[in-house]
Structure formats: C-alpha cells, structure tokens
Image (cartoon, rainbow, N blue to C red; front, side, top):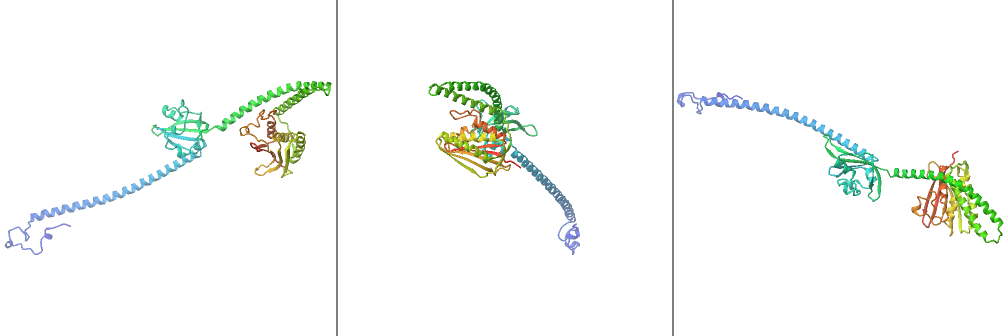
Length: 437
C-alpha cells in the first residue's frame, strides 16, 4: 500500500493563515516530513516484497534439498542392504566350507573363526573371537606361528603341514596355507589361515605303507614257505621210519614223538602262511548258511569232547534258509577258525553260541552268522591288531588264523564286526551278501 499525503491528513483541514504559520497543516507536520515518511514506507514495501520473494525461493530450495536428501538416504539404505547381503553371503560361504579359516588383525587378535575351524580344533567361536591367537593355540618354543610369521615378514606360506593342538590336548595333523589381508589401498589389515584335517589321509598313507610291507613280506614268505616245505616232508618221512624201527617200550619214542609234533606244527604254520600269501581262488555257488554251520559245529562238538572242555554249544537259527553265494570250503575254514578261537578262550568252560540271522538294517541285504563265547575277551589295545598277520596273544599261536578269516570274508564281499569285553567274552558277526535271484 502506498501512503500519500492525502491519506495522512484528515479530510477536514483548515488551509487558512488564521490557524498558524504558513506551510503547516493542522497537526503541525510539514510537507517535507510527509515526503520523507512516504519514501520510507515505499522503501519498506520494496524490501518486504524482496524478503517475501527470498523466503519463497528458500522454501523451494528447501523442498529440493529434502527431495535430494530422501534420494540419498534411499541409495544409502540400498547400499547398506547390499553390503549386509554380501556379508551374509560371504559368512555363509565361510561356514559351509570344510576347511577351517582363522583370521587375525595386525595385533594378532582373532577376527574370524568358522564352523570347520571349530570342529577341527575343538574350540567354540565364542572361545576364540576377540582374543590373541597366542593365548589359544600353542606351538613349540623354537617355532613361530605361521600367521604371526606372515604378519611379521609379509611372506605368505603355500601348501605346508603342521600339527594343530586340539582343545582336548591331542595333536591334529593339518595341511594349511596363509595369506595377508589388505584393503583397497594396499594397507595390511591382518592375515588369514586356511587349514584342513589330514588325519585320515595320514592313516591311509600308513595303511598303504603297511600294505606294501605286507605284500613284500607275503612274497618273501611264500618263497620261504615253499623252500621249507620240502625239507619238512623229508624230515617227517625219516621220523616215521625211525618210529617204525623202535620198539613200543623204547624211551626214545617219546623224544621222537616230540620231534614229530614239532614238525607237524611247523608244517601247519607253513601251510597257513601259504594260504595267506596266495590269492583267494574261490569257487562260488549257492550255500545255505545253517547247513555249513551245522557241519562245522558237529566237528567242533567232537573236538570239545576229545579235549575234555566243559563247553556248551547253543544254536539259534532265526533264518534257516538264508542263502549266500560262497565257496563252501573257504566258508567252512572261516567258521572253523572262529570256533576254535572261541574254544581256546574257554578252556575252563563256557558257552559257545552259533546263530544265523538277517541284517535288516542294511538296505543291500546281508545274511549274518555269529560266533560268540563267554571266555577271556580281547584287550582294548589289541582290538585294532587282531587281523594283522603274525599277531597273537596265544603261547603257541601263529597269528594267521584271523588274518586268513578276514582275507576270505573280504574275497566274498563281506565284512566282520567284533564286540569284545575283557573277562566277559567275544561276539563275532560275519556279514555276507544275500544271494539275489
């Protein structure tokens, strides 16, 4: 609104000289004062309009800033979501790995420890994270931890082996490799070690070495046994001739009997050695397990009576018609060896149990025959050695009986399960595949 002189003066003004000095209005305000006031109000109006325009512009800019800020917030939220998804994905990969992963920072504090590392070492993640690695894992006084070596020297280690000490205190052989962790600018953040348990591999290597040793020993034994057998035959023949020439009351016959007994035992050892070292040549045909067991048990009953052992035989055939594809002669030898071992474990008397059943837990379908005794049992430390050739706890044993049993059962695609308790007895189960029509 523009303020004019007329708007400031009252409508009824006396412009005559009788009211005062010339050039003044009734209220005493001069024209010059009115002009200054008018200019002041005009300037105020202009500045107010400029301020209004500036405020409107500021509001418009504020709206634009709000829109841009919302857009940036949305982009940031999406970026954080992607980063979280990536982190979750990488964590899932680490947790699903079969290899253990340990990460440390430059201060040797553990920052990563996955599930496989926990399984191999025995430590829980909560036991390790945030602690110095030297407080958890130990090494010999002269050795430096590979992770600390990498941080100190910057030299990464590829494909090496070491011993990792389990939480329980036993050593675990592991294969490992280490690497430095760096950011985008190349600054070192720490180090990581990836390792895997090679216990089974070491066991297989030892088993292969033992197999090679046994193969060489088998070849040598076969040669030696063949060379020994001919002189044994000649010695047995001469012993028989000497016994024929001596009278029945000659005291030398006792000595000759000891010689003949020793030759017989030596010949048995050589024969068993040849059986073990030669490949199993089996003539497979349909065999009813219960029938084979009955044949062997009949012979065992005679042997028990001859030796005067107080042993009771119990037979349980839950499936008398179980048929397998086997060599009857070889299977007869397996059953006889197991029964004789059971008898020797019960020289003071006991119960010899013989049974036939079906292994219903196995999908492939196996028939099972069991030889059990209530004898002295097998020591725990000997359980892993009982099938090794020449291992025996008997005074006059050869250590080849169970080795031959296992070899024959393996040739029939079967397997053996042994359960034994000291002074309580032994239960041996032999599983053979059922014959498929």
